[in-house]
Length: 287
Ligand code: PMP
Image (cartoon, rainbow, N blue to C red; front, side):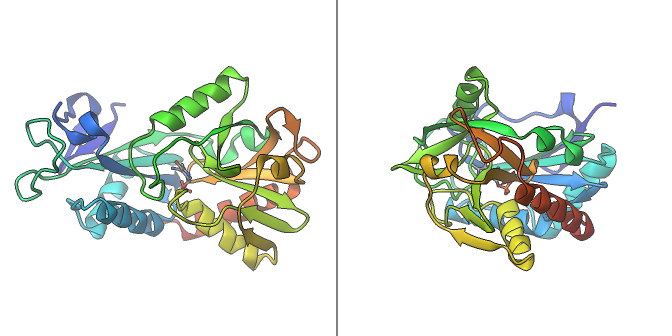
């Protein structure tokens, strides 16, 4: 089955979809994105992703080419056209293709933004074997720009971080700035001490994860303690458990940091419980 994608108002087979070589997303990483997961053929936390998208766009003075209702309709149409039961919908909006390369932003009245959406089919996404074994992470310096709260398509350094992890025989990297963990290359980072879940507080230093918001809410509802504060790699190594969250990995245990086993070296019970609650509640609320 050929994948059907969405480009600037049209549903097309992926082989026929085109974006200009002058697109500022391509030339300058001048674009933002969202990834929404699909469970049981439905969108998980669409509202959260739509709200963050609006914020990313407004922080960059970029116009949205579609309304929130249109965006929901496009997401649903792509899920249906591609028969996605478990997987994700990727969405990207860039500042468009002005025709010449220029650092100055084009006039949005003349240059419309570019919008692209596509699906990725991932059967078994919720039943990932990695959730049972846990992930190994290394720490790397966080040398990204200072507006990580905006979900831009500048993903070169996170990609490099993943490659450094792979080279070290690990699964991912936790980034460290001024001695404190910021986040994973594509996820938010947590440690657990007793009944307390510790994760970095929100600021421009990290992406405000949609999964993070939901997981912290569920944790509080389940009477777990949540501390939003800075923590170091040394503190993480001494923790009982560690885990990460993101839209496509949900809650994923971390069992090793820089070669040191966390807790028992096996996925912990807090992470397992939060994953279970998150998946159950997300399936119920998916639209
Ligand atoms: N931090 C970074 C750097 C990310 O790339 C992501 C996922 N895109 C996250 C955190 C997790 O965000 P979410 O839960 O909204 O997927």
